[in-house]
Image (tube, rainbow, N blue to C red):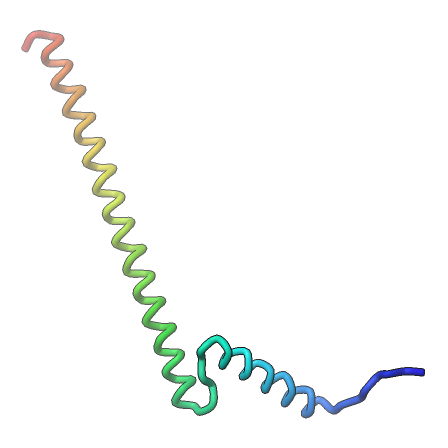
Length: 87
């Protein structure tokens, strides 16, 4: 005996869509109306812009620190060379 159940593609699509809506709702994302979906998209866009801004700032700060260290080492080498040569 076979316990297989046959359903149409439309029925399967409806079941999957309902399962996804339930999962999103459980995570706190409402997908009941188009306005809710648009708000969620804007929230994700905001988070992406914030992440990119933080990454950019972190890169610039890191570069500034590296340049400061390299400048300090350069100054130290030049000052040491002058002191060694007696100038």
